[in-house]
Amino acid sequence: MTQTADSPVMELRERMRGDVIGEQDAAYDQSRRVWNAGIDRRPMMVARCADEADVQTVVRFARERDLRIAVRCGAHSMSGASVVDGGIVVDLSQMNRVTVDPEARRATAQGGALLGDVDAATQAYGLAVPTGLVSHTGLGGLTLGGGMGWLTRKFGLTIDNLVSARVVTADGEARRASAQENPDLFWAVRGGAGNFGVVTEFELALHEAGPMVQFGLLFWGLDQGPAVLRHAREVIATLPDDVNVIVGGLNAPPAPFVPEEHQLQPGYAMIVVGFGAPEEHAAVLDRARAAIPPAVDFASPMPYVELQKMLDEANAWGFHAYDKGCYVEELSDGVIDAVTEIFPKKQSPLSLALFYRLDGAYSRVTDDATSFSGGRSPRFATFVIGVCPAAEMLPAERDWVRSMVAALRPYAARDGSYVNGSADVDDLDPARYLYGADKAGRLRHLKATYDPGNMFRGSVTIAPATP
Image (cartoon, rainbow, N blue to C red; front, side, top):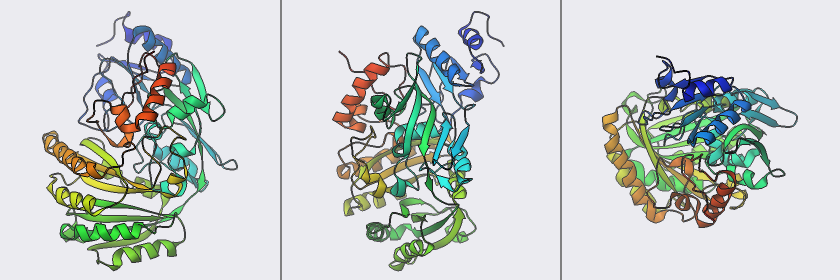
């Protein structure tokens, strides 16, 4: 079937260089598909933008017709923020160029670049920017919510390394946001989760990292969980900045280095990554394995680009998923007891509960320097993720996620929750819950300036302040 000559799809198609896909087009179902198979939304159209001018055209068109916009980069949003019922998807996937200036240690990435695109371009010069853990994630969505990854303790969040951004705001104008130009917009996009416009270009500061890094995985059975997490608490307390650790509950991977009897079995793991001297990484591993011998003990150097792809298969497209999280200031006995009681009750072998250490460079940025949803004091970001191969498994796994986060809530920090780590928020005022009262208030006032009609709603809606 084809669109009629006077249809909105045909009208927009005539205005822009890129393609526009409507409900009657053969490519429609594929174009609206997102990473989380649990999301099934039907936009009016998908606009595959060829350049920034196309983005401006789409935004102005949506404003003329009072349509909502969703922005698609990697389509990896757990909440499905990259697709919208009845509105327009601004698809940036064709705008994925990454250029590197190795002397200035700067990278310029278009808004549709994936993390793998950024890693490939920067590692050609032995450089990197802190990003996430899955290479097919979009740089845009990750960055606008904050951006946590293996390099966060060493170099901060992705937004801490954002030098400038080009933003198409709700009036269709393209603005450069930096510390010198439109600094209020620059503050808002560094954590505001896509609520302030379409970012068509990111300028990022780069650091020396790789090409080889040190990797270690230690794994213990379920019955050792309480003792392992208490010991992990002691190991993490003295980590050097060049080493990062993720600890939590998961199923052992079906990898060659995992004994067959432990493959796909649930238990508790410490993943230890080193960016400094191999001896420093080895010393952390020695401490981690000393008290309780692990069932799986693997350590090896690996290329940084392979580290960044290591979790890709476990996060493949097509799974049904749901997540929630919170920050906890420490792995207290109460936190450990809650996790080890509830973690074994999960049903999917793909589901997991992880604690990601945040300190070092992360904590050398002040709370109000960006709009990031959370304080900067040392803490753990908790990710409880239900991942199911079949839709019928998701309701039970969603309940499991919610029960664990509810059990952790008495120990949670009171200064926000990571906006990229919650598929939904059980609160009458989600923005206040995620950002805290002060940041939420400032964000609402800026929203009234840059998007008074609430065209952009991101992964959480920040409603504009009323006069």
